[in-house]
Image (tube, rainbow, N blue to C red; front, side, top):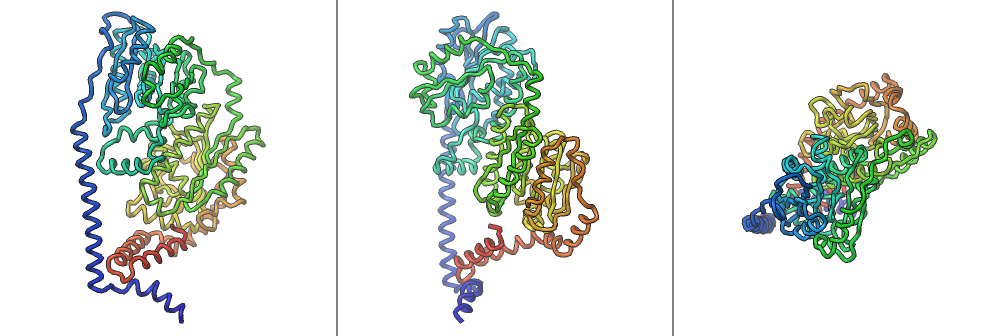
Length: 592
């Protein structure tokens, strides 16, 4: 009897309509909450717009000293975020002491706190101006940048190399970085206040410039990848120096290891210097003089020994999915490492372990983007691990395949020799000529294997609903129905013969097959893994009666669940108990 009453209290009474008085009181409280939140947002918007209006105009670029009239050496000095060229004049004075005839250009850009400037566009503007100045100066070039200014100089240098290999970039022999966040910043992840401010600034559509410097952001990662790949190719690379303070709360010396591992690089740490004070002459002047006086070195030629080293290293990223703690991927990493070792490779297989990532978090675009940033940063670190030209392979399950798919679009410099998918949540047409990953297969991914389970309800139902309702970009049923419209068919294979659920393809009996496919040479990579086509067709067809119907009805199921939650919250007799019951049900179904 007591059990019956408890079930009625939890699952029947909450759906009964509340009294008129209670509904009125509830609506009043909700209205007060909504109005208060709206007022706070409006006040914040007014404060931001007032600050934008009061921001001083961007200073114009100018020459430190007289403008050059003939052939001379050229120095480009670029300030950091929220600063201006005047803040770099102490550094310019150090350059002048080293070479009285040096032409020093103090470059400027919109570095205001709420700037929406595109750093890629700023770097292109900077590159064009340096090219124009160098066409008159004709001498060697020195680049000096503080914080964000250092990143802009690095990108403009790479752009100059790509545009004209014999142009101004070929004359650069020193790049001095003063506390440049070469790996990006992690400020918002360390402070709840900054995270809230970042969320508000996003809603106000301001601050795009500083967000481009977050660790894992496309501007940062693409710059890192291009730098790692291009600098070793240079016969005469510039000397690159990172000067950073040991009290810097934004940048550490470890953040530049990928760019400073080459022979033509150096790192100097300043005692008792902060991120802002590093531009003072008394703190960094002696170190800058040391960099300018240091002899240049040439890159080691690419010889047969280096090629042999490259061929004997096997790099792999092995990434688990949502609703998973990654234990199976530790097993898969060990299997991959074992196969690689048996074939004479030195395995560098990384299996990142992030916290349990629920399907409800998966629906949240902010949490998805944060994981994409983490994935991209991890890829850049793996690429930077010597030898930097060794290919990288990928094995991912569920959300791990989303991380790769999203990264292929946001990070054009990201490449994988082979990619293994299990329970993929990417859209069926992702790799088609009109999909979000159009052209990725063959350009960014050499070979693709997609393992499909016949009763994969998280992909067949959850991802189908997200796709039909446009609740998540790139998401669909590629791990349930397979990928369609693929042009590079010879680079793609699919297994549809796993009778089971979302993680069936990752069970131990298939791990050896996955490891062997990843490690074996590419020429043999696409064949011999198709399984039994007749069995695959049979298993897929037998599920169609219920699973395909459930997949098609998933959007309606989503709407019904949301509608029920709204009804219970505003009209139900016990809204909080009823919502707790729904959450318990979702957890029981392993969705939350």
